[in-house]
Image (cartoon, rainbow, N blue to C red; front, side, top):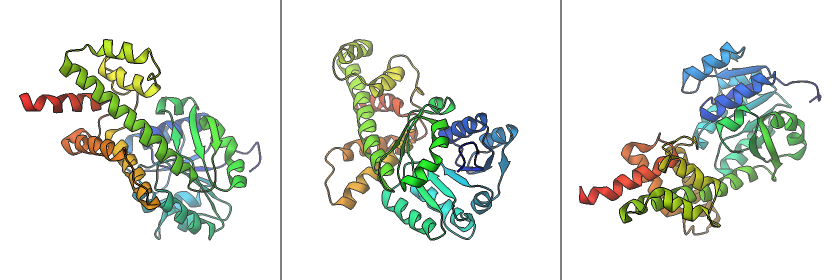
Length: 301
């Protein structure tokens, strides 16, 4: 890719994060083709900013030299990649496809092989930070795959991310992200329970936070949960409980694939799964404190 050339980008998955990334890319002057996945509103917004629309993943790939995916599950990735109207059917030799979501590493490797047979490249590049960071080009990007292919698209990734890492061969990004999100969601769930337990004990949430935050427990994740628990701001971490449950489930599956017991993730997965099953799936992760608090109240109600 010429250093001064802006590639034609096809973007699939304009959810909370994807729509922010698409807006950032358009602000940076990239020609963009989008495709409706679930929600029509961000598609129309992108079209109003000058994007084009494709009817199928294949058509989108045919119109693009760089394809970006930001969908929520491995199954969703596979649904747009495979089949007669999938991305793989439409890519040309030299095309690079990037999965920005959190997927199962083994699935990522299989898709990479299928693209390689077409002369195309596949990178997994899961993200850190929030949609607000995406709008400003301040994401953390954990890229993996062929080093030369990664370097070729690094200028584009640099427009999306403040911290852009190449972390290893294909699948390494998703592996790292699953470990990262297991730790993050476990921390958030534990902090949510801590606030709910403080309620039962008659402790002020602010007091609990002040004491805990004064020591080595202080973290960004603690502050995200505190924003909801104390300040009533649930979306400082704009990540749904359903997505958190999915990611921790993928982490557990990865551990199973390694033949290794995961000691901690089953408890986190259970807590998030219970919340999802009781209708909290589209609420934000910091709202786990409200779910747990309500659950604690049920025996005495």
